Image (cartoon, rainbow, N blue to C red; front, side, top):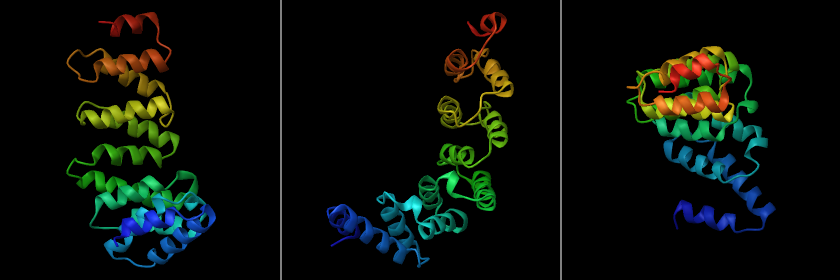
Amino acid sequence: MNFHHIVSILQELPEDQGSDTLTNFALELSQYDDNQSREQFLLLTANLNNNIENPSIHSALADIAIYTEDSENMVLDALNLLKPFQLDDYEKEQILTRINNLLANSDGANHSLLVNNALKFSNNEEREQMANQFIDSKHDIETRHGVLEALHTGTVPRSNLIKNQLINIASSQSDPLNQAAKNTLKDLFYITYQEYEQIKN
């Protein structure tokens, strides 16, 4: 019987019993630092409804996100399960340092996901600066669309800095983000008649 099958059986137990069993199993796995145990821990945690409330599980997730060296995907899985409000300022700083290190050395496959997580765990001022940086045309289109999505969801604050960057993109016919930038400006920002004339063509 493989691990996924075991998890499925546990999920079929009555809610309280199944949840407690999954939580205890996850806590046991969190004590090990080999990759197989970490992967199994992440799978279990993804199936827990109460993992946010368990400080030991939160701590294990943070450790995976900060210290796992040889699996970028595992770091991203842990980041996906963590919530910013669970972390103190020091943990956020450590996580952002880790994400920035990964961005500096990433082969590009996970670039957009790393940027999204950098935005997720930053404060508003940092998010504004990051969004302005990563929406630039030197970055891949998926990453740039991710910044627009973060604007629409409210993760990135609307500011004049971002607005001016979007106007520049919307004014450039050769930029592949041209139309999306126009739509974002019209949907989310106050634009003057002069600004509308600048981007309408």
